[in-house]
Image (cartoon, rainbow, N blue to C red; front, side):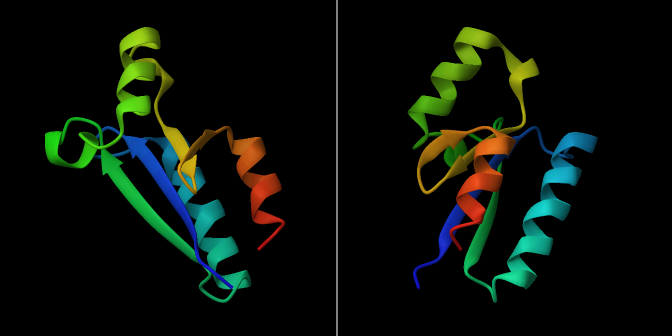
Length: 89
């Protein structure tokens, strides 16, 4: 089975919300035998954020308050949608 790549876009140092996401993802990672790859991306790190034009556009449009944002296998998703996707793994 291929690994599900989950990217969490946040401000370095994180927030309570992304900490909750981390706990969710790590718990599921254990349950699904390591089939999940978690990447945390600091939106203020130009090298990390540069390839993610969709995330840059969302932040430009809606502001920094939309963070953290989640991508699962290259698609921006809500936490609820992430839970649905994880059920497949």
